Length: 160
Image 1 (tube, rainbow, N blue to C red):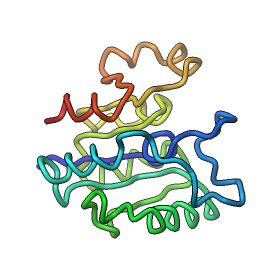
Image 2 (image 1 turned 90 degrees about the vertical axis):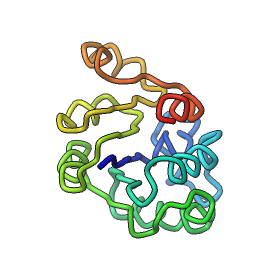
Image 3 (image 1 turned 30 degrees about the vertical axis):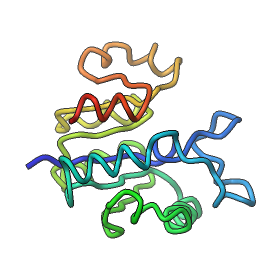
Image 4 (image 1 turned 90 degrees about the horizontal axis):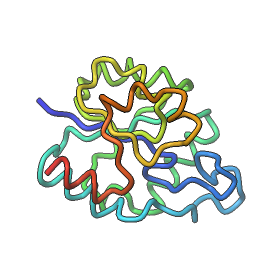
C-alpha cells in the first residue's frame, strides 16, 4: 500500500525571507504564505492516488507545532486538500521523521532537506523539494536516489 508523507516548512508553507523554515516566529504567522500550487497539487494527489494514506510529518518545537496546527486550520488546509486532520505528526528532531515514516509505512516522502531524507532508508520514493545549496553539496551522493523537484506541479507529474 502506497503512503505519502509531506513536510511543512519549505514544502507546504513557504520559507521566510530570512531563510528559516517558516515565518512562524513573527506575530502574524497565520498569514504565512503557502508554497505556490501546493493546495491543488496535494488535493490531486489525495484524490487520484493516495487518498486516506496521506500524512504530514514535521519537525519543530512545541510552540511551532501549535502554530502549525493553527495555520493549517486557519487556512482551511484540510478542506482544500482532502487530507484528514488526524494525519499530522510531529517530532522534535529531523532524524525523528524516519521512525514515524516506518511506523506509518510511508512509501513516498517530500521534504526540503536532504539532512532529513538521508535518515529515511525505508522510504522508497524520496522527493527533495527545491533544496538548500550547501546541503545539496554536502549530501550530493544522495541526489542519485532522490527525485529533485522544484515545484508542486513537478511532483504531480512524477506521481500521477
